[in-house]
Length: 238
Image (tube, rainbow, N blue to C red; front, top):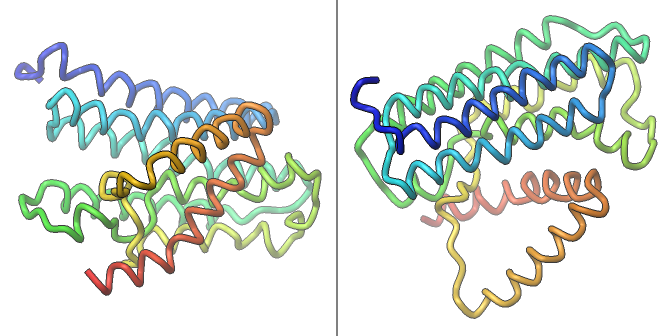
């Protein structure tokens, strides 16, 4: 800690903000304010993506930052989303399975421990830069909370049934500890000729995010998971 400069602490502040939002989301879930609770997890995931980019931009990467980020992720994305789903099921008079929450937390902590080990390795290859092994904890949190988002946006009770809610957490939990290759944002590059199209697409998405937040999040999470088969194909070619 004595070796850390003030500049190196800036990315860590974003990590602390992400942690704060994750814990506050749990507080709102206890109060049964579901939309606020899920929104805070979404904002926490945005901040989680920023801290690593800031560390690279400021050239302040450190083992302390890696460990702090993982501990924050464990709380905000590895425990809180599962508890939110559990509390939501209780509010719907469905007896959720607490064992699923524990299983989800075990898988997320295992995934983060595995990620930390690979992050500390000096090896740098195209596959390591372009792909993650398994689904990241923020992405798993998005899939975990997707049924609630669909319920908020479409007022649909399609996912509100006893069997689904009890065992749904198995899927994002297993994806976290799997070796399925998924795209890493820092490894994605686009040709310059596609830049105008990407700018228009990003502007359109930001507009949707401001006008129809839940629909924008449903689309984003769906696109991410639809991209997994393409990532597997691309990984095998690399």
